[in-house]
Length: 459
Ligand SMILES: Cc1ncc(COP(=O)(O)O)c(C=O)c1O
Image (tube, rainbow, N blue to C red; front, side, top):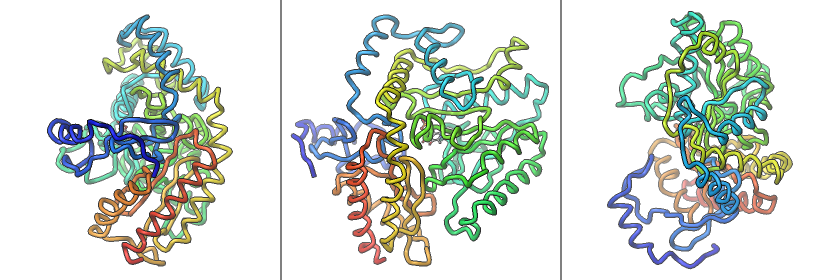
């Protein structure tokens, strides 16, 4: 493993983190917490001085990797000296106006407006409020329900949690404010019709339509789904699925939303994965890759017909976030988009994605790898006990996903994601600037790690 000079503050930082910092989605005391203090290209370094390939792009965010700081800083510095901040509450500034125009120009249709937020959960909640305001304005206030998919993650703030289908995150936080019916996601693995796109798609769409009708077709406001679902491990949709969702939504007067918090801004080689699916959803939520994580920002793209009733009736959109559309984040997002265009980053993903998929699929030769799925620079390996794709039980998953793999990945100098939604999944989402040699290196390291995981689990 490539090693740099350790941070002389290492021990103090470990202790101080234990004493003062609350970690997200983590046990609060971790022995040898990974503290990252440098980034360069697709690599990050911890305070031991160890180098890692960030094969997860800082949780699906760092589209550009870590070497554009100087360019970003120049844009930030200009904005900070000109106007550090003002809100989007009844006023605006050039940075967000220009960004809204740019983002709209990249969207799957030419009639989107943009509402800026601070991140993904805020985008999902803001979208829901927009949906409600729409139906109130057009005289259908009874549309209060939504359809979402099993195991999908749409955020964990209390509103967004309504749509999230990961049960352990919901327990103990009360009845969600939105009544949501869960339908099957697009996981083909273990499904008898999973290899027959047409049959699989027809079955899934029939389930969605049945769910709309069962909930009361005139009470349903929204169908929400990710183009490639993250939770559970990179479930791609069968051909025709999104056009089918669009048709169901239109038939029953329901709005369709694509949650593109992960898939937006290049992860699968398009600005918006919805474009690849051939649909223009009524709403699209984004965050993460919008700024390539050089600053926090999210957004909701809303089609004209959704917002038009509010505009026509001169209604106030009763929702706002003080820092939503912060000009600093807006110039970072604009700069990130400019760099993605200039350096042909989407072209890089498109040209490498097929080979990456082929390379990852070679891992299927390992007995512990039961399935490999994904698209673009977004792939998952499902880990299984045997040739019959038997699932690891909870104790085994704890050992594998929370014990063995994190340590072994660290030793391999690789950051990847161990995901446990009942199935044991390992995911990668490399920075979109990764070249063929780096992608090979990632898969090579995965091969070593998963070989050892198989031995460890006795597979
Ligand atoms: C699809 C999707 N929606 C929403 C969210 C919530 O985003 P945030 O963590 O920025 O609130 C996430 C986070 O991973 C996500 O993957």
